[in-house]
Length: 123
Image (cartoon, rainbow, N blue to C red; front, side, top):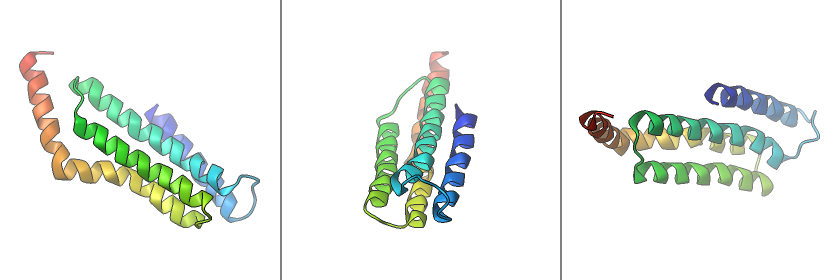
């Protein structure tokens, strides 16, 4: 799932290049979604792998996923509103940044606690 979503993101970017060059019949929303959906699948699969490895779920993860979803939906809504493809794709690019910044600020503490609890329980 991780590698497939990476490949699909590349294909979506290829579709975006065709859109920018006016060589496609896809609309702006469909083109943005062709990038945003694989990015969402990638981020969700990374969280799923984390949950499977640590065997715990944290509300902080849910918050980060919700903010990420808002960013990705915002990109599609901006495309529907006529905002340029470049701006929409820049917004899609910020979706993984939500997770990175979240973990750098607070998430690393949550991860350490979850790993310590899992190791202490002997799971």
